[in-house]
Image 1 (tube, rainbow, N blue to C red):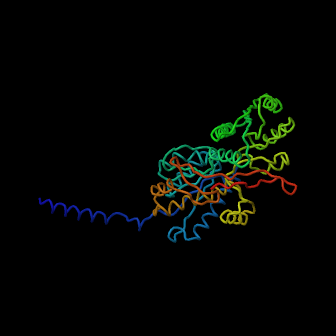
Image 2: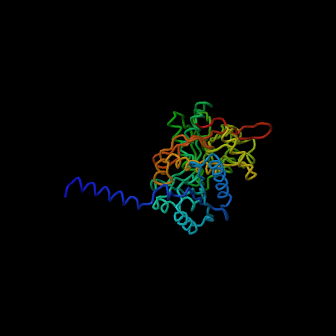
Image 3: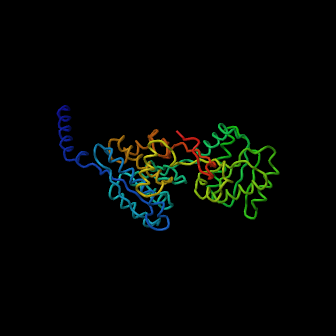
Length: 383
């Protein structure tokens, strides 16, 4: 057979075959995003704030024109923080062909769906989990402030702006692994930025605060400018009381676990001077944050905390990735999301690294006494 004629026949057959395939324009994937989290049960407060933050983002995004005039729909499922219900919810959302699943930071909501979502090639975004979920696959992402970045930025501020050079570290062996990890990160940050560790002590089971701090005071050979403590708010207050009792008046530097009303309420004047990092600060006067805070208060009657802010940004990240990809197919959206750079969110500018982890700068806060009360004050906003 004539080669040219064969080629022409093949092209005609290929063309006719292509006419039988469904076109993208006729059968596009729906603009649908799934939400998983506890809306009832023990962790409902967290799940409901996540949902409220996302609902605000959906309304704002769709009112601004959505994707080429088409609105994004959300499907939210209450998993009651139950492992079995979580698996069922993920399978249901996959069956509904959602583009992405945004999950609350509660245990089963974040860790249960990972393998199912990645196997189905559906984007999975954990909104606010403090624990790394690891690079379980290219479709897995986490939007949360990294403690690595938070500790480094806090130490840089303390060194450069407050001129704190000498640090003491108190590690509580009674707390969970997060406390130990953050203490270690602070140690590394001090060394990285040429600070000096002049003393260190540990609180074990059977060792009192009085004994631990007495040992610290004995071992420290130079003046202490600041004390690093990565435990929770209640433990930090007790540490500060004992430090003052033993004549150590240095301020505390801690993690975002201290960013609580209880720390201010129960600590009072003794916590003034404490420096910490946070992933969100509702007192930020930027137009984007001010609008979000106002809308959230109108919707819920409460001031937003970290979780609804991260949830809001998580939806916006996925929505922006859909817009950039110019397709609702998860494979394209995943690539756009993985390449995201400096998206402006209510928690700051957000980029994604090669491991699906958010890169963002923290808010640096300091507890200050003003008008007879101690409040958190923003001293530096991450950019």
